[in-house]
Length: 360
Image (cartoon, rainbow, N blue to C red):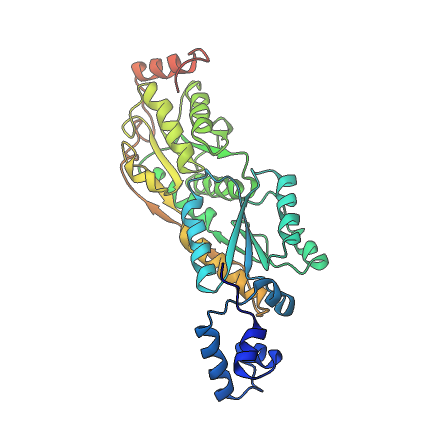
């Protein structure tokens, strides 16, 4: 195995001191251009690789970023991670991933672990913490950026409120008045923003808020399926759904399909995220697009600015975009009156009364 080349080896070959080599490799202004060029050429010819631990002792920058995600299986995180990693790589940083499983204690353990590893900074997606990260910074000078946590000063978020408004406004314009919201109890702040947007549109159109139409899921396929089953048990089920995310929407559509409820003829559905699979559902899902790749890019850029001590770092909010596909259509019940068909109500009731083992 070939021995690694050190600064001392380059110094010996160049006939200068190791400190001169070190300064030249870091482009110190006191080293002449001629000497610096010769040392850089020797370093390249001798295949010198800088020691990251040794460099970090001087610069206090390990060129490593800690990235806390919720679950490795979360499809939303794919493009987000790519965005973070591409900016990190372009700037000479590597990324360590760890999952919090949406558990606040686990999140804190991961943060401590990253600090012990002397990472240069941390990005957190789906944080279960709060603005106490600012107090943590007072004890440990470790920059932290949060994704989709708009109350935190160093955060990059989607405009969840405006995105929800676009989705619900679209359903109202199609004539829907009984619009349900399938929430996510495991994502408090993002869920609150989307719920607030949902309520705002109803208020704008003088549509009474019906608490029975707001049901809790957990952001998963199974959670969406179960939440939809609760809605089917209502005396008058909704004619449209606004779902916390695409996974919830797809789970809800599975329940509707089993119940014989046709989408969008009998019930319109809107998701949130625009996952890659949204356009391949049957029918293709109308949804609100989060700029997940851009979220990752901007979060990493913000963290680099904090690591490098650049001033005027401010929270960013990125726009959401409604993507209309084939799961939304005109309301089944005309505005101002009309009844749902007895056969449709019967199928909903049969689904709601089905035993626990009924396929979802």
